Length: 239
Image (cartoon, rainbow, N blue to C red; front, side, top):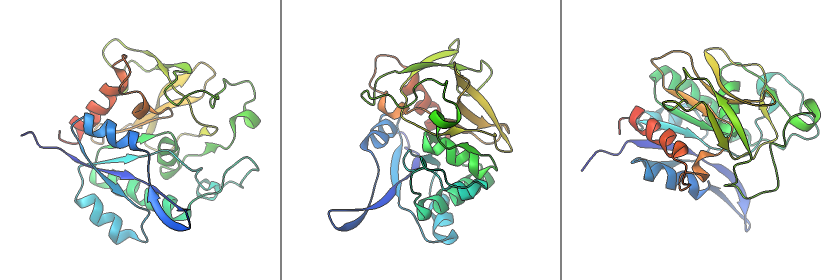
């Protein structure tokens, strides 16, 4: 039986039905299993030692979507439209990125994940697109999560580009976006309004790819591209 790479999947924590719990969306687990990976949910953790131990046991890291990143991490004041942050989650994921970069552990970052990746590398974020860029597309339309809301243009020389595919229709579920790009990253995709839709590590030794949309919601779609992204991640992780 082929070996399944173990992938750490980040989660959030909140009080549900009067009990503190950790969780993530099942779609991430389904997409990883379909790609041949073994997902391992990672809760927000208290310190470096636990994060380091988790990374030593893993072949890949998936940064999931969710809460806004605390603007303090990129030297900004919180704006009115910015949601409350989860401090423990921010700290855990910032440690994960630093450790994955050091160990060259393959990393796939989705929605909040690409924003967190950018912040971890010294970049900044647009806190609310309708306020800071009012002429942009609607990046959070009131449609089902699997609805392909707009197209993105993909850099033909990037890890994101499948052979011959430079334009993709994607879903869209965000109000924040990458602003100044962090050190060691490059933009690999944009929407027609200029919003960054994809980032990746410049260094070829580290497979790190981030997308602003939610490909995990699209892996059962007839279009194969989102499945191919998870397949590429699985290969990078040793699958």
